[in-house]
Image (cartoon, rainbow, N blue to C red; front, top):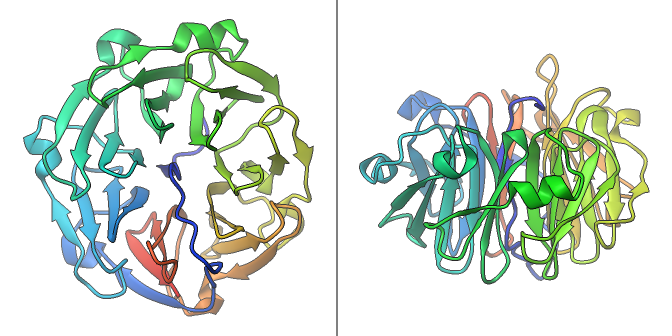
Length: 328
């Protein structure tokens, strides 16, 4: 299994008119106020930023993208029977789905009215859900142990692991999933990449080990350990790009990736207090890298989460040390 990190999937990526700028960091430390940390996933739905922590079943929401200090802990999930650490979030226009240890829960766009479901029986055990995506008619969740399932309503799930294995995926975990308008694309701990129009019938190719994948509007871009970067127009034929290993990233891993307005942004592993953010305006071919500390952050650690505000004005980060960093 890849290193423990965020399993946020950018499901329906907001595309603002202009590319998100990366100029300065306004920090907000949630741990000092609420006592929770290790944020593992972030998403935006309407004007609401939703985050979940890998150390608790609580959910956190804010309506100003962590620019001020109004983040609120939500215990709604626990009340609905969802008693799991959370590692993945998915959204569509009307719902939020959270994923944990073979558990999911679906709520409305206000992060309320939750219904929890267990995938333990269909998967034959407990596996950490690492990614969630919506294709317009079905939700698809992916997990450790090469587990995968689909659901039309986020409540009733059907196991699709057998069909993925039949396509040649193997037994290694799946780390992320994204929908590009035509196909799901999944990446994972082995060298396999899979694509599917419906989450049932899969095409699997051998590429590289990836932690995360996004759709830029014209290409899939995937990132992995040691700054590995690859891109693909269709999810089947992939092109090696200049790895971030050759930049200040060194041997650090890319843990999360997202793309808005044609700008692809990656964040990830830190070493000795050095965390970096890199962005590309040509589908991952060329990158600009900045140290978060140099942008005004005084104590930015490993970054696990990445989400853009609805209007494209604020990029919010969630980290290992419970920091929200709003980059404006």
